Length: 107
Image (cartoon, rainbow, N blue to C red):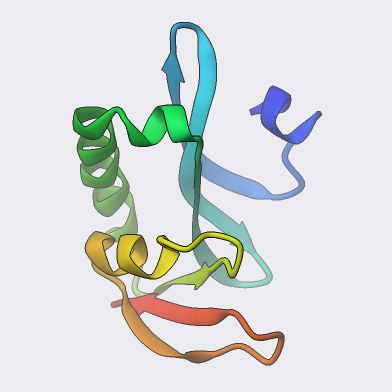
């Protein structure tokens, strides 16, 4: 995590990582801040090619998500597959944030 953020993460989180050949290629989990539980993920192209590991990661992430009453996720405008991936995890679209990102909820 420190190598991803360049230091201690700026919030409390439960995170999972995927390493490929000793290099950090994915980071995903739940962020706890401002009274909200927010799901996050970021994957490199190398991680996306690891289909089995991605599916296993989604399974682990769902187990963590299901421990909470409501978890939100935001679709990055910079990631063209964000909407499909977030929906695949099990989130439902609930609207658009005032800053323009699409908002999803897992209940």
